[in-house]
Amino acid sequence: MVGSAVGERLLEIGHDVVGVDTRPNRWVPELEENTIQLDLLDANAFSVLPDDPDYLLHFAANSRVKYSINDPSLAMENVMILDNVLRYLRTTSDPKLLFASSREVYGEGGEGPTSEDAVTLEACNNPYGASKISNEATIYANEECYGIMPVILRFSNIYGKYDVSDRVIPKFILEATNDQDIQIYGEEKTLDFCYIEDCVDAVIAAVDRFDTVAGRSMNVGGGQSWTLVELANIIKDVTGSSSEIHVQPNREGEVQHFLADVSRAERLLEYDPDYTLEEGLRETVDWYQARSSLLSEIGE
Image 1 (cartoon, helix red, strand yellow):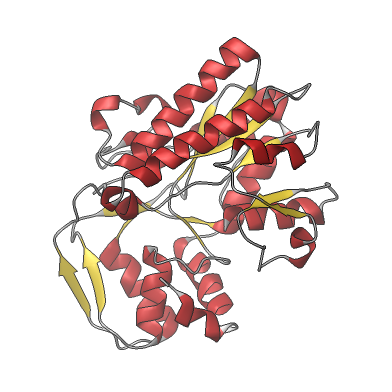
Image 2: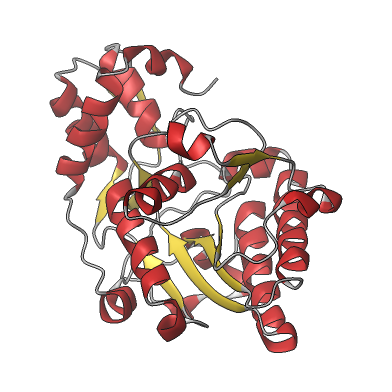
Protein backbone atom coordinates (compact mmCIF):
# COMPACT_ATOMS: atom_id res chain seq x y z
CA MET A 1 0.00 0.00 0.00
CA VAL A 2 2.53 2.60 1.12
CA GLY A 3 5.18 1.46 -1.36
CA SER A 4 2.71 1.77 -4.24
CA ALA A 5 1.63 5.26 -3.22
CA VAL A 6 5.22 6.42 -2.68
CA GLY A 7 6.39 4.89 -5.97
CA GLU A 8 3.52 6.58 -7.78
CA ARG A 9 4.44 10.00 -6.35
CA LEU A 10 8.16 9.53 -7.09
CA LEU A 11 7.34 8.73 -10.72
CA GLU A 12 5.08 11.79 -10.95
CA ILE A 13 7.87 14.12 -9.84
CA GLY A 14 10.40 12.63 -12.24
CA HIS A 15 12.38 9.98 -10.36
CA ASP A 16 13.38 6.65 -11.85
CA VAL A 17 11.85 3.95 -9.65
CA VAL A 18 12.39 0.19 -9.53
CA GLY A 19 9.84 -1.70 -7.46
CA VAL A 20 10.51 -5.04 -5.78
CA ASP A 21 7.68 -7.30 -4.64
CA THR A 22 6.58 -10.90 -4.49
CA ARG A 23 3.66 -10.18 -6.84
CA PRO A 24 2.72 -7.76 -9.63
CA ASN A 25 1.72 -4.20 -8.70
CA ARG A 26 -2.01 -4.02 -9.40
CA TRP A 27 -2.43 -0.37 -8.47
CA VAL A 28 0.11 1.68 -10.45
CA PRO A 29 0.68 0.48 -14.05
CA GLU A 30 3.72 2.73 -14.53
CA LEU A 31 5.30 1.22 -11.42
CA GLU A 32 4.44 -2.33 -12.45
CA GLU A 33 6.37 -1.79 -15.70
CA ASN A 34 9.51 -1.44 -13.58
CA THR A 35 8.72 -3.91 -10.80
CA ILE A 36 10.94 -6.93 -10.25
CA GLN A 37 9.21 -9.92 -8.73
CA LEU A 38 11.33 -11.77 -6.21
CA ASP A 39 11.16 -13.13 -2.69
CA LEU A 40 13.18 -10.95 -0.33
CA LEU A 41 13.72 -14.00 1.89
CA ASP A 42 15.97 -15.39 -0.87
CA ALA A 43 19.37 -13.72 -0.51
CA ASN A 44 20.47 -15.08 -3.89
CA ALA A 45 17.64 -13.30 -5.69
CA PHE A 46 19.13 -9.86 -5.05
CA SER A 47 21.62 -10.31 -7.90
CA VAL A 48 18.99 -9.07 -10.37
CA LEU A 49 18.58 -5.70 -8.62
CA PRO A 50 20.28 -2.50 -9.81
CA ASP A 51 23.95 -2.29 -8.85
CA ASP A 52 23.98 1.22 -7.42
CA PRO A 53 20.63 2.76 -6.42
CA ASP A 54 20.57 6.31 -5.06
CA TYR A 55 18.23 5.24 -2.27
CA LEU A 56 16.54 2.06 -1.09
CA LEU A 57 13.10 2.58 0.45
CA HIS A 58 12.18 -0.51 2.45
CA PHE A 59 8.45 -0.98 3.12
CA ALA A 60 8.22 -4.78 2.80
CA ALA A 61 7.07 -6.62 5.95
CA ASN A 62 4.51 -8.93 7.48
CA SER A 63 2.80 -6.05 9.22
CA ARG A 64 -0.34 -7.38 10.92
CA VAL A 65 -0.07 -7.61 14.68
CA LYS A 66 -2.70 -10.31 15.11
CA TYR A 67 -1.10 -12.50 12.44
CA SER A 68 2.29 -12.27 14.14
CA ILE A 69 0.68 -13.28 17.43
CA ASN A 70 -0.90 -16.33 15.80
CA ASP A 71 2.30 -17.17 13.88
CA PRO A 72 5.49 -15.58 15.31
CA SER A 73 7.52 -16.91 12.37
CA LEU A 74 6.03 -14.05 10.33
CA ALA A 75 7.83 -11.59 12.60
CA MET A 76 11.07 -13.53 12.17
CA GLU A 77 10.67 -13.20 8.40
CA ASN A 78 10.82 -9.41 8.87
CA VAL A 79 14.19 -9.86 10.57
CA MET A 80 15.52 -12.13 7.83
CA ILE A 81 14.27 -9.90 5.03
CA LEU A 82 16.04 -6.87 6.47
CA ASP A 83 19.25 -8.89 6.85
CA ASN A 84 19.14 -9.68 3.12
CA VAL A 85 18.37 -6.06 2.24
CA LEU A 86 21.35 -4.85 4.27
CA ARG A 87 23.65 -7.44 2.67
CA TYR A 88 22.62 -6.08 -0.71
CA LEU A 89 23.09 -2.46 0.38
CA ARG A 90 26.61 -3.19 1.62
CA THR A 91 27.56 -4.03 -1.97
CA THR A 92 26.59 -0.55 -3.21
CA SER A 93 28.89 2.47 -3.28
CA ASP A 94 26.69 4.98 -1.41
CA PRO A 95 24.18 2.96 0.66
CA LYS A 96 21.19 5.03 1.77
CA LEU A 97 18.22 3.31 3.44
CA LEU A 98 14.82 4.75 4.26
CA PHE A 99 13.13 2.23 6.53
CA ALA A 100 9.43 1.99 7.38
CA SER A 101 9.17 1.20 11.06
CA SER A 102 6.06 1.31 13.20
CA ARG A 103 4.51 2.86 16.29
CA GLU A 104 4.44 -0.73 17.58
CA VAL A 105 8.06 -0.26 18.73
CA TYR A 106 6.67 1.81 21.63
CA GLY A 107 4.30 -0.85 22.89
CA GLU A 108 1.73 0.50 25.34
CA GLY A 109 2.67 4.16 25.31
CA GLY A 110 -0.07 5.70 27.42
CA GLU A 111 -2.52 8.41 26.41
CA GLY A 112 -0.08 11.33 26.02
CA PRO A 113 2.01 12.13 22.92
CA THR A 114 4.82 9.59 22.43
CA SER A 115 8.20 10.93 21.32
CA GLU A 116 10.91 9.03 19.48
CA ASP A 117 13.05 8.43 22.58
CA ALA A 118 10.28 6.46 24.33
CA VAL A 119 11.22 3.04 22.91
CA THR A 120 11.91 0.46 25.63
CA LEU A 121 12.29 -3.28 25.28
CA GLU A 122 10.06 -3.91 28.29
CA ALA A 123 7.09 -2.12 26.68
CA CYS A 124 7.06 -4.32 23.58
CA ASN A 125 3.89 -6.41 23.59
CA ASN A 126 3.70 -8.40 20.34
CA PRO A 127 6.06 -10.21 17.90
CA TYR A 128 5.56 -7.67 15.11
CA GLY A 129 6.67 -4.82 17.39
CA ALA A 130 9.64 -6.94 18.48
CA SER A 131 10.65 -7.46 14.84
CA LYS A 132 10.62 -3.71 14.22
CA ILE A 133 12.73 -3.03 17.32
CA SER A 134 15.19 -5.65 16.10
CA ASN A 135 15.15 -4.12 12.62
CA GLU A 136 15.95 -0.66 13.94
CA ALA A 137 18.80 -1.92 16.13
CA THR A 138 20.27 -3.86 13.20
CA ILE A 139 20.07 -0.81 10.95
CA TYR A 140 21.95 1.37 13.44
CA ALA A 141 24.57 -1.37 13.87
CA ASN A 142 25.08 -1.32 10.09
CA GLU A 143 25.39 2.45 10.17
CA GLU A 144 28.16 2.18 12.75
CA CYS A 145 30.03 -0.77 11.24
CA TYR A 146 29.44 -0.49 7.50
CA GLY A 147 28.55 3.12 6.77
CA ILE A 148 24.95 2.55 5.70
CA MET A 149 23.07 5.85 6.06
CA PRO A 150 19.56 5.31 7.47
CA VAL A 151 16.43 7.32 7.96
CA ILE A 152 13.72 5.59 10.02
CA LEU A 153 10.07 6.64 9.81
CA ARG A 154 7.72 5.16 12.40
CA PHE A 155 4.29 4.99 10.81
CA SER A 156 1.07 5.15 12.81
CA ASN A 157 -2.01 3.43 11.34
CA ILE A 158 -1.70 4.52 7.72
CA TYR A 159 -4.98 4.29 5.80
CA GLY A 160 -6.32 5.14 2.36
CA LYS A 161 -6.17 3.81 -1.19
CA TYR A 162 -4.48 0.57 -2.30
CA ASP A 163 -5.48 -1.36 0.84
CA VAL A 164 -7.70 -4.44 0.70
CA SER A 165 -6.41 -5.94 3.95
CA ASP A 166 -8.57 -6.56 7.01
CA ARG A 167 -7.08 -3.61 8.87
CA VAL A 168 -9.54 -1.68 10.96
CA ILE A 169 -10.49 1.07 8.48
CA PRO A 170 -11.06 -1.13 5.38
CA LYS A 171 -12.95 -3.57 7.61
CA PHE A 172 -15.17 -0.84 9.08
CA ILE A 173 -15.83 0.59 5.60
CA LEU A 174 -16.85 -2.85 4.31
CA GLU A 175 -19.16 -3.45 7.26
CA ALA A 176 -20.67 0.06 7.12
CA THR A 177 -21.23 -0.11 3.35
CA ASN A 178 -23.11 -3.39 3.79
CA ASP A 179 -24.99 -2.19 6.91
CA GLN A 180 -23.42 -5.01 8.88
CA ASP A 181 -22.62 -4.90 12.57
CA ILE A 182 -19.28 -3.21 13.30
CA GLN A 183 -17.19 -5.08 15.86
CA ILE A 184 -14.82 -3.00 18.00
CA TYR A 185 -12.18 -4.52 20.25
CA GLY A 186 -11.42 -2.14 23.10
CA GLU A 187 -14.00 0.49 24.11
CA GLU A 188 -11.36 2.83 25.54
CA LYS A 189 -8.75 2.18 22.84
CA THR A 190 -7.40 5.41 21.33
CA LEU A 191 -5.16 5.44 18.27
CA ASP A 192 -3.52 7.93 15.91
CA PHE A 193 -4.50 7.56 12.23
CA CYS A 194 -2.57 8.99 9.27
CA TYR A 195 -3.97 9.39 5.75
CA ILE A 196 -1.85 7.89 2.97
CA GLU A 197 -1.15 11.19 1.17
CA ASP A 198 0.22 12.75 4.37
CA CYS A 199 2.39 9.67 4.86
CA VAL A 200 3.71 9.97 1.30
CA ASP A 201 4.49 13.65 1.88
CA ALA A 202 6.65 12.65 4.84
CA VAL A 203 8.51 10.00 2.85
CA ILE A 204 9.20 12.36 -0.06
CA ALA A 205 10.40 15.05 2.36
CA ALA A 206 12.76 12.53 3.97
CA VAL A 207 14.19 11.60 0.56
CA ASP A 208 14.60 15.26 -0.38
CA ARG A 209 16.38 16.02 2.92
CA PHE A 210 18.09 12.66 3.29
CA ASP A 211 21.63 13.85 3.96
CA THR A 212 20.36 16.33 6.55
CA VAL A 213 18.18 13.90 8.50
CA ALA A 214 20.28 10.71 8.10
CA GLY A 215 20.67 8.78 11.33
CA ARG A 216 17.35 10.02 12.75
CA SER A 217 14.07 8.31 13.55
CA MET A 218 10.81 10.23 13.19
CA ASN A 219 7.16 9.59 13.93
CA VAL A 220 4.70 9.91 11.06
CA GLY A 221 1.11 10.13 12.29
CA GLY A 222 -1.92 12.33 12.32
CA GLY A 223 -0.99 13.97 15.62
CA GLN A 224 -4.42 13.32 17.16
CA SER A 225 -5.92 10.26 18.83
CA TRP A 226 -9.40 8.84 18.32
CA THR A 227 -11.37 6.07 19.96
CA LEU A 228 -12.42 3.23 17.67
CA VAL A 229 -16.04 4.10 18.50
CA GLU A 230 -15.44 7.63 17.17
CA LEU A 231 -13.74 6.18 14.09
CA ALA A 232 -16.65 3.84 13.42
CA ASN A 233 -19.20 6.63 13.83
CA ILE A 234 -17.38 8.85 11.33
CA ILE A 235 -17.32 6.00 8.82
CA LYS A 236 -21.04 5.40 9.44
CA ASP A 237 -21.76 9.08 8.78
CA VAL A 238 -19.63 9.17 5.63
CA THR A 239 -21.23 6.02 4.18
CA GLY A 240 -24.77 6.76 5.40
CA SER A 241 -24.76 3.41 7.14
CA SER A 242 -27.31 1.94 9.55
CA SER A 243 -24.74 -0.47 11.03
CA GLU A 244 -24.85 -1.13 14.76
CA ILE A 245 -21.62 -0.86 16.76
CA HIS A 246 -20.73 -3.65 19.17
CA VAL A 247 -17.82 -3.36 21.58
CA GLN A 248 -15.73 -6.34 22.70
CA PRO A 249 -12.75 -6.48 25.11
CA ASN A 250 -9.34 -5.48 23.78
CA ARG A 251 -7.47 -8.34 22.10
CA GLU A 252 -4.26 -9.78 23.50
CA GLY A 253 -1.09 -8.03 22.36
CA GLU A 254 -2.84 -4.97 20.90
CA VAL A 255 -1.84 -1.48 22.03
CA GLN A 256 -4.71 0.31 23.76
CA HIS A 257 -3.44 3.88 23.51
CA PHE A 258 -1.11 5.67 21.12
CA LEU A 259 -0.67 9.28 20.07
CA ALA A 260 2.34 10.22 17.96
CA ASP A 261 4.45 13.21 18.89
CA VAL A 262 5.21 14.45 15.37
CA SER A 263 7.17 17.54 16.43
CA ARG A 264 10.49 16.10 15.25
CA ALA A 265 9.10 15.43 11.76
CA GLU A 266 7.56 18.92 11.78
CA ARG A 267 10.96 20.41 12.58
CA LEU A 268 13.17 18.28 10.33
CA LEU A 269 10.83 17.49 7.43
CA GLU A 270 8.41 20.43 7.63
CA TYR A 271 5.79 17.70 8.05
CA ASP A 272 2.30 19.14 8.39
CA PRO A 273 -0.60 16.72 7.77
CA ASP A 274 -3.14 18.20 5.37
CA TYR A 275 -6.03 15.85 6.12
CA THR A 276 -8.25 15.63 9.16
CA LEU A 277 -9.51 12.14 9.95
CA GLU A 278 -12.93 12.92 8.50
CA GLU A 279 -11.41 14.35 5.30
CA GLY A 280 -9.13 11.36 4.88
CA LEU A 281 -11.97 8.92 5.50
CA ARG A 282 -14.16 10.68 2.92
CA GLU A 283 -11.37 10.37 0.35
CA THR A 284 -10.89 6.72 1.28
CA VAL A 285 -14.58 5.84 1.11
CA ASP A 286 -14.84 7.60 -2.28
CA TRP A 287 -11.90 5.52 -3.53
CA TYR A 288 -13.51 2.23 -2.46
CA GLN A 289 -16.96 3.18 -3.73
CA ALA A 290 -15.54 4.05 -7.15
CA ARG A 291 -14.12 0.50 -7.18
CA SER A 292 -16.97 -1.34 -5.49
CA SER A 293 -15.69 -4.80 -6.46
CA LEU A 294 -12.66 -4.26 -4.20
CA LEU A 295 -14.86 -4.26 -1.11
CA SER A 296 -15.45 -7.99 -1.55
CA GLU A 297 -11.67 -8.54 -1.43
CA ILE A 298 -11.14 -6.94 1.98
CA GLY A 299 -9.70 -9.48 4.37
CA GLU A 300 -9.41 -12.29 1.81
